Image (cartoon, rainbow, N blue to C red; front, side, top):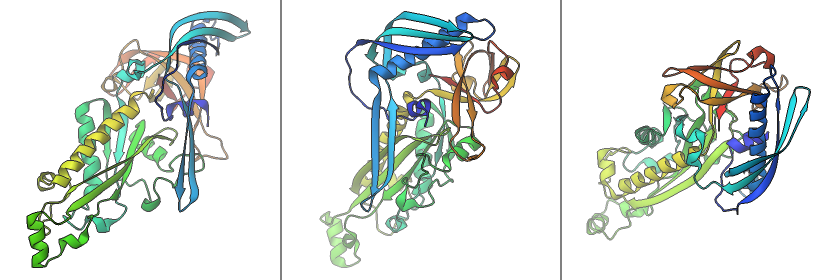
Length: 396
């Protein structure tokens, strides 16, 4: 997997690194004798190289099932920022400009300062299948698989930090008990890329409800003694709630975030009530209130996981030097924004594989913004760099 994909799908870890001067090297292609644009691109590439040298954070996560390693993940990321930059060397060979810089790097504890943080990324939320439907009989809460993600969708929409698209009727995991370990060898979920493409979103949020069982099923007996114990509050009426939340990058299918949320509460509704999940009667129970709080934690986790990710949008058309993007004002784009352009391709012998990305060395500047699309200019015609529809544009 390319370093670029490792960065956008990295699981960013906490930690602190002392400030230091670090060298980095970058290069860019000179197009149309525009040395100034190439110098800026080479400088940005050198800064990214210095950031990774200063604070490259490698995270690995292994998943075991019945004592067997079923999934292994490796990710790399950096949260460093440059406070001061000095150019040490600049060389030109033909149309290639190479630059070496020295930067005073420090750990960036507030990634919200990044350019991409102000933009609203497009997110699809799918259904959360229930691992064991026997757990849903009490209260008839089998609708949790669609109601829970719909409530998460409503919360995220109210926040306004991302653009949310509902797909709660879609189930991402054909083998629910083993989800999310059923992935391809390249660490991507097989159907994430397809769904993201169909909905034209950058990320896919999904999950699995693992547990909704009663802690003591015998406490719900029908005898007079059982009823008396429940009435007196001496019976164990605790109910569990365990759910896995996953966020996937829609372009590569790679995991960006994964966490298990667990809580419990007293199921103090009548055993014959058909409350349904998330209803007024459900929320009136102690258990329902505990689940509501957990939903709030999920909402915060999704926003936090996406806050430090770059903003990515598809190129919908290239006409000479003009580039049209599939995102506009609703995403937060505005005239003057600059996006780096990347070529996206697949190998002919692996048409279903994760797309590879190549930096075109071109940057476009947005000059016209509409609600759902925008357009701008790049310094050279797209055909020279083979830029075309379905390639991508990025703000870091």
